[in-house]
Length: 64
Image (tube, helix red, strand yellow):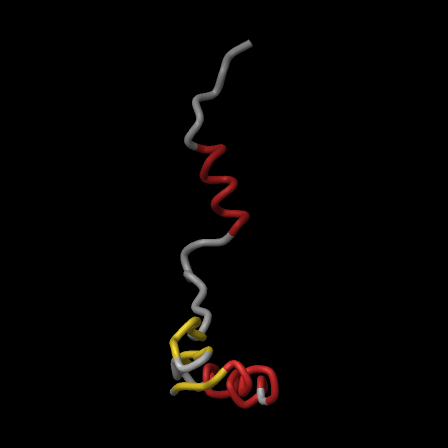
């Protein structure tokens, strides 16, 4: 789907609904593509907490 910057300003809910259905929306400005709205997909095997603890588990334990 293609939409103008004017459409983005005046009809954001419709464009977000399209993205929510899995469509890609190309935003144009003065007839030239300038942005792309795509559905957000989370990586099911990754989270901020697990990344942090992964860093800590890979470090050697120092004996004091």
